[in-house]
Length: 157
Ligand SMILES: [Zn+2]
Image (cartoon, rainbow, N blue to C red):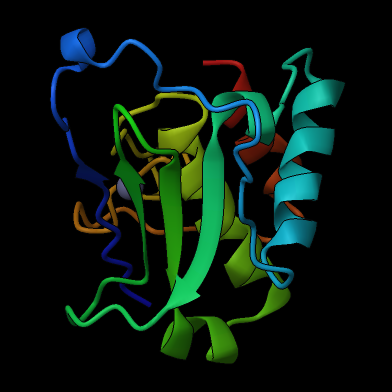
């Protein structure tokens, strides 16, 4: 399967004129279907010494129709409002548990860990990072057997 995952960096307006961007009563929305994957990400991070707090980091999770074809998920960054992780509804419905986890973790790699794409591959052509772009040609091997290795790479880089 070819994954084309894009993340949009919305630089937003430089916040110099905004003195109070943070509202104490701000509610961070995370879709109830995405929440279990956010929780898993937090648990995997904790195991690796990474403290994960989506409220403090201000990262939301939505399932929406993404109009652009081949976009399965994206992370919209915003300097003022919370970042928005958006899963394409059509893909989400059809995706397996492992596919969903991969996609959510990949996007949180952008949104939460501030990672960019890494398209390195091993001698067999397998992607060495789950932060691959989906367009480089390396083979995504994220599954229950490789998961731990990919998660180590995700959190420890
Ligand atoms: Zn990406």
